[in-house]
Amino acid sequence: MSSDENVIAGVTHGALAYTEDKIKAVVQRFRNKEIAFVEDPEVINIAKEQRGTAEYGLLREYSDNPDFHILFQMGLTLRKLQRQQNRVESLRNKILKKYEIGGLHIAQLIQNGFFNRYLASALERARTPKQLRLEIRNLLDAIENSVVFVKENDNVDFLAQTIIIKISATNPKTFIICASGWATRRCREVEWEIKKWLRTGTLRYEFETYTSKYREVFLLIRLEE
Image 1 (cartoon, helix red, strand yellow):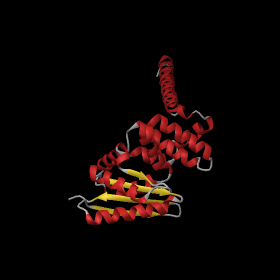
Image 2: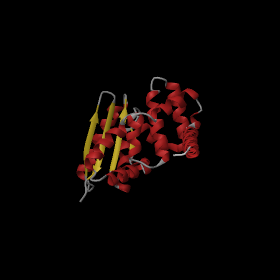
Image 3: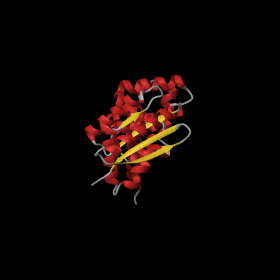
Image 4: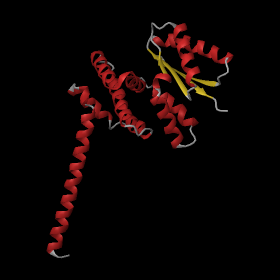
């Protein structure tokens, strides 16, 4: 190769590398802009760190919705901030403002590890990756009709009836009832009422329950004909 060719090759390689670096920088700025609503610089840095975690990478595999990716990131950030209650409440309020109640509930599913329990169950049932992604998308798209977070002061009868109405109206593939902390006892009471209703009704669901010291996840999975 002549000296001129060497120079041209070097310039071309340099230009390509420069272009690639510029593209990466633009992508990074865009990703950072997506979480600018958080405002708190320290929390933003924590949120950025979540992009490098194995859990975030896994969650991204099962959804191509950019808003869901941000909410996964916010859920992991909320988990990291669990000992800083003021920051947790501030971030929750900002998520609510930007993504409304459905977005906040997606973030909370991630925060408390409830979504991982659901995902483990869905992985066992799905026949193909496409089927799994579709089920996850349907769950998250209709989260207000598919997930209930039980609170410590909830009225069991009222909440059970609300859940029964939702299931009867939409017959979802999966319905999740979950709670953390002191609300787990109330969650078990709601589960009992739902089980009684299903045993005497026409809808066919199977149950899966995951219990730990401070977590309760009750999955209702529709039985296919």
